[in-house]
Length: 121
Image (cartoon, rainbow, N blue to C red):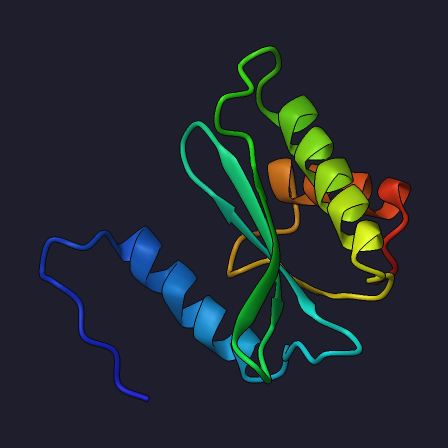
């Protein structure tokens, strides 16, 4: 797959997107075991649980509007909320998609929060 980027796209972002494509070749979400996808921006963290077979987003949680904590603590809360919403929809097993980010900091904290909330991956 050939990627095309603007000449102004940073090398860091290009490298992350290349990693994302490599990861997505192997990480697929199904109805029995959907994909927990993480996105992080400069200020916020987002988590979605996605069934790739049907193309449906089953659960979506973010740190938007929750300004009482920030960083790693907020990511852990988002992970716990995602797990709580997933268990309400009878989802216990997921595949973790770090979306090209390093498994460190907010991404790791979100994963730990999801595990504490009851998700298995």
